Image (cartoon, rainbow, N blue to C red):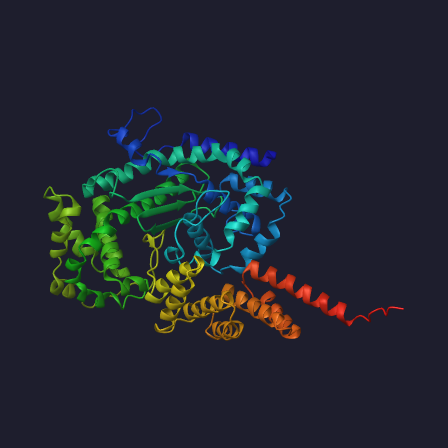
Length: 531
């Protein structure tokens, strides 16, 4: 570590060592309920080696967003410098892979890799934690990334860098622990929930120091809720505390989702009695489409905003309700008023929820919202909701099952499942993968003529880049097997030149192309005559 980085870390250490939350003095005694705070966030706030490896790989591959910001943690510059000084053979493939999955929006680009990191197990294998059909859609494109990361993890000696990073992570976790525990404890107390949250549901906050400062991402996968936050380091203790307070509010928002989302599912029949109100939200230009299509999500987000207003100082409450309503969260005011009745009784929210929904008067809300002027843009500070795993279409679920059957070589069952996918309404990439799956089965069952037709159908259906590159490669193999070298080379070149294609398919096609060209050269040379 050079002198500049050492000085930066020293300044950072001073800021965090002296920073205290608003209610906490340097010499203050433990707050009431401090023992509950420790239990509340035990193992729920931590760093993660898998996430660290993914973010280190991104930085090495070209992810530069926020790298030069004064708010970035000094650890990021240190890790980037260490990686730049290493000879990492896999880095060329990693950079190509990163560029192939590039997004113009930096947050969108980061989001897909956060989703990946939360969907795989620990190094060095990075095996997927869910089956194909259960993987988040933005993760399925990364089927080859685990192998690349395994190479990178070993070649870059990430284990050593991870160990060197522990003091920085420990310091950040220590800084956030107490105020975060208090925020969650306060929300739990209001909802009268168990301090452990929802039975069978895991809530985990990971600290990251290698992304752009101020980033916060949240995910809800099955029974797991994850929050990944990258702190911003302010120039002063006061500013650092302000930035931390904003992120803690975002984490509490995600926690409220983890508790209230299951209630919307459990009591969906009660919510359905108010669904006519959904039409009132659709004209709101600042409201994300997902809320205009899913009444349960709209209701839950509105309820969370109402709870947050109830937990805020009285002077801020009216403004919070007005802002949420004008952004399109039209049930916020009704829930806020209904929570007054909730506070005056003793049942927990998980039991009171149906009664809270009943307090919403559809006719009265239509009158309240008549003539409302919705905001044209939202005041976005952090994530407004837990980014739930997108709902898969029926065809996507069937496709995942078919691909799993094919992977287990249950070919007859897989063929029938792929054919059922094709009977569903057209979804280009889904149908393309179904044709591709049928073509692979035809190859395995030694039916090259049918396989060729099906690979062509896959290309005609509008495949994603990975499927397209593999389809071209297999068509090349089929043409080569039929001694049609020129046709084979054409398909191999198409595979090699597929933007964003599978690295394995491109590498295999490149090797096959070289081999056919070498064979052609050998055949074109005059043969020596025996004398």
